[in-house]
Length: 271
Image (cartoon, rainbow, N blue to C red):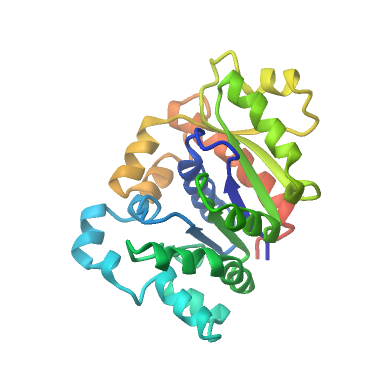
């Protein structure tokens, strides 16, 4: 089933990880699709600590456990023993039968991370056999081959930008000029979005003559706090029915638009 990569061509762009956390979580809440959320960063714990408080993860030894997450899968992949079922066994459920999180590489050794970059496309292909949707947070500052391989191997690419006039122009040049994205299904998404900015969705679309809709994950300090505190699931459940004119309701309504577009493109159905 589809692999959905969140990526920005500009290393100065921000908000990609928060965007993929928001979209994958709301996808799991809104639809019966089974989702896996994973990342390709080196020594980052941002995704893991958005669903479980960082102190709890440290106390549990999760970050030192080589039998958890990507570290375990790399060993299976390099020994040709990786199966789709194994990925489910080594992922952490955060929404029962809806969203699992695959913890990142449990090592600070660069060689171990290079094992991940070499094997990530293979791991995601196996994951796609077990899940309806596989969400991959692709680092901006990463090895060129790793980036190209991951983008080329995905079915949907969510291209993330910010509301910066200079960066926006460069963004579209890079996205349109990358050979691996020529025939790829793409979604343009503005992270850390401010609707009152001069560079709102309507103006960006008009200036750059975009035919397709663009989407947004608005800036929301309460959502950011939830990511920092490991309370993302609770944040969404507390605000899922909030009015779209409310601060949190507006955030969720905008994320929901991106969720529904990805769900449509993935061509999956609620069972």
